[in-house]
Image (cartoon, rainbow, N blue to C red; front, side, top):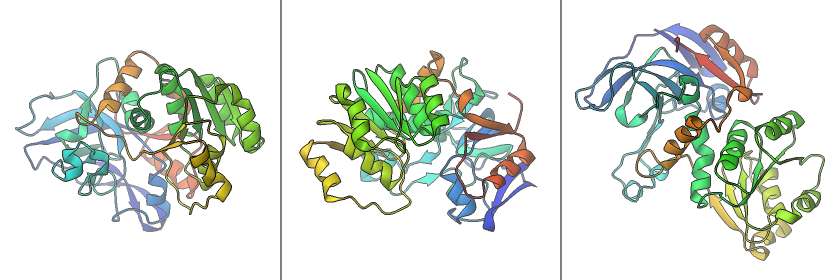
Length: 349
């Protein structure tokens, strides 16, 4: 079978690999249709950030069931499914409290094991959700990134009636903007330094789009003055500057959900730190995207939003590539960020 394999030194190769087979009663063999490149994959490719090499990445994928073990009784051949990449132990104290994202003994598809950037992959039944008939396979490959923002919204007790501010208008941010609007936010504001991303955010539901490179935190605060109460700020960019910005622009008793992963040290001035105290802010750390009952309300909500046509993914896609072109598109990043989602297409829908 064809597999996109990552070697050390950032080599992205299309190779013929042996097809996997079922080894356990709870396993499912999936023929992959679409797989998305995640921002977290980029350091795995270019910064030796993977757990082992050579590795087949891919944790945002969808496909059809080919075969399944004898203990799997709720799937049929050719069912459309999407990947749930985390596999918690389900036994540790965190899992017993349904804090699955915090499991210390987890496995992860496409990181700690080979993933979906191949024509066939074997995963546990717990690592799949069945797609409704009115959710496409391309949409299915976006369910995992959608649930990242939905998890933070869930931790914040929802967004209905709140003034939602999304800092960072990349893929996760654009999806969060759409989710917040669909789920009853009173207003949605996008903040980024890229005007093209901000224009897209406006098309996808942001009532206001602000460039934080052109406006100071105080100027942004003035824009938000009439919406300073009942704020939910979703920080998705994952930089020290955007975390600091979130704290400085937050209104009284705002919720600040930190979603983006930092790759540089964060140093807060005493003034910025004082905002947490003086405005009585609530800081929410949001890690991954799982809750109870497994895999979580986030996953069910994502599918409902697709079913109700509340989410647009096509404007977020840079390319849908066959394996050789996908390898070339990924290699061309050279460690830099994506400008739109790079999708791998392995089989026909």
